[in-house]
Every structure is written in structure tokens, then in C-alpha cells.
Length: 232
Picture 1 (cartoon, rainbow, N blue to C red):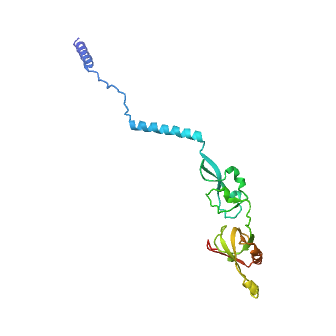
Picture 2 (picture 1 turned 90 degrees about the vertical axis):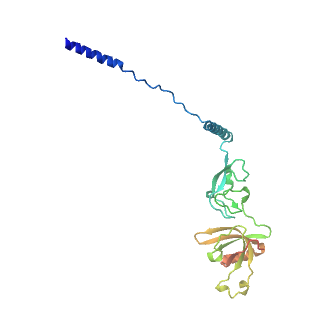
Picture 3 (picture 1 turned 90 degrees about the horizontal axis):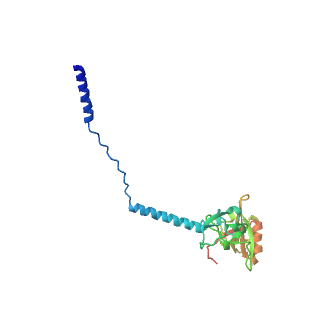
């Protein structure tokens, strides 16, 4: 009986010890408050507005550019323009630059350029002609010149040159040929012949000297010297 009483008393003490432990309070969870920055909000609204304006501008103007004819490879003055010399280039609509629309590229192919066309430039509509016609009192003459008969620098249309008669060994006995006066001319175009290593130079000379210069050229006795620009 004492054991049962002791057991019962101990059980009562354990129960009361359990009920005497106070509950652990739980921390209340408060929502995290984000701090907004007025400057960042204003910047975001401004960027959104600018993006909307840009979309409206693009929608109203399309791409804002137009395709024109540009130069892909160098074309010397006086030479014929080939299809591979041209490329399509985009420029801003309403630009004051004068150019040939890409839809009219075929109008340029096969024509001669009056000026030197450099890669990256635009083809000016007034810079191409159907053919080169000599002026009054002038004639076109073509000379096929070896490296020793011409300067080693490129010649462009409009370069002032002097055609000199260079006699051969068999011509030394002819005083009239040896003392032939040089003839002034203007370069119209140059074409390099890779097979013969010669350059065909088309020149304008006075009509009176055309026959003489052509004769020199056919005999291989013509040599060209480039004169300073502006020299009469």
C-alpha cells in the first residue's frame, strides 16, 4: 500500500510539473515593408514614356531609311561601271544627299563615270554618262602603253598629259621624226590589260594632232608624261 501511495504521489508531482511549465510565446510575423525610391520610380516612368514615343515614331516613319546605289569597288574616272562595282546602301529618308535609288541601279550599269568612285561613297546621278564625246575641235585617241611608256602612278580622267614621240633605233636617221613636237592631251580613261601588262589610255587631243598621235601609238613610239595640274 505504501508503494502504491508513493507511486501515485510521484505521478501527481510529475503531472503538476508538466502543467507548471509556461508556454513559449511565438513571435508574431509582420509583413516585410519595401522602401520605394521616388527617383527610381520617376526614372522608370520616363524610360517607359520614351520607349512609347520611339515606338510611335518608328510606326509612323517605317524604318526611316531608303536604299540607294553605293560603290563597292573603286571605279576610275572614265571607266565603265559594272554590276559588281555597286552595292545597296541605306541612308536616312529626307537626306539632302543626291543619290541613285537602288531601283534604278540598272540605269547606272554600263555607263561611264566622269569622276573617280571610291568604295563606301554614293553614286551621284550627274556623275555618269552614256558615252564620252569629245568637244568641238577635239578627238579621242587610244594608246596601248607598256610600263616604260607611262608613269607608274594611276591616272585619272582630266589629268593633263604630254604625248612625246620616242624614236627607236631605226628612226634615228629621220630628223623629222626625231624632232616631232610633243602633243598636249587630257586623260579620259585608263584600262589595264593583265595579259599584255599594258595600259590602254584614252585621251582627248586636238583634232589636228589626232592622226599624228594615233600613228605614234600604232608604231609603239608614244610615251606619256603627266603634267602638273593647272598648267596650260
